[in-house]
Length: 335
Image 1 (cartoon, rainbow, N blue to C red):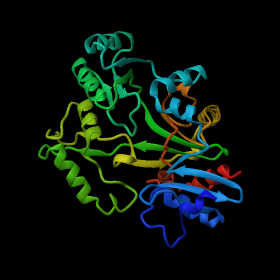
Image 2: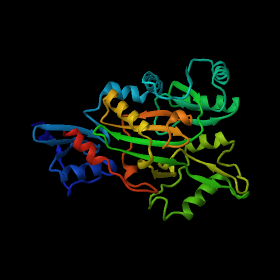
Image 3: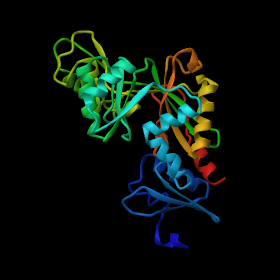
Image 4: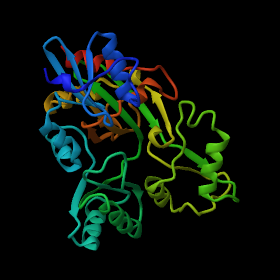
């Protein structure tokens, strides 16, 4: 068997595996599933039990439909797919790097109207995205920023509401979080860069060591500040509170709201998983409330995460009950 050429893993030779790869390994071994590491410096694993084997790279599996994954990775294709299924999405237009930025900007302002969002078509983790754009200068600047990450970008309507993530496993299991950004509050003295540092230091027991991550100073943070009309060097007025990121990934909070999710959102996730052939999928939603049908509060689906959907943050939400989906994923892959 070819697996003889790989590194057979056990609880004693895990080495540098961490995160979801470590949790997958731990659960697989508890189920008497053999685990092999293909490369010593990569997270690619082969899971084998009897005559069945599955390849896994983080949450990407050999049972993932490559065509479905391609659709999910492209924000334009995934939006067209969602519209075909009759699901709510925000109105948008696309542009390429060789298009006239001013002309496209004028078209977006005329056809969609402020506020707007600009995002690269294929970038992940919020890279190159600017939200809540309310003027033409910021729109033009945001287009140039997005084009650094992809030659094709999308300009869409900014929908007011909270940001939710549904992670759905093809066996029917799911978890839902309400994702809140990290905030800082001005004191009319320190710059925003200094306020971020102060927040990280003052809450170091919670940030980095606990359930909250440190607030990152990055290009994504810079885009959030631009949406609010600030830079890292701006001195924030006293008692003015501004968001710095999308979610817990960059220092915000994850709140477990699984039991509150409206059945419509779960059905959406199920159909996307089945239609695209994705054993695990993350669905990003903006809505005024997760327990209300989106047609009643202007809720929309903003993204499908089908390649490497994060699965671990459900294990350690900032508030609420922990939910582990790894057993469901592994059991489904070997069913």
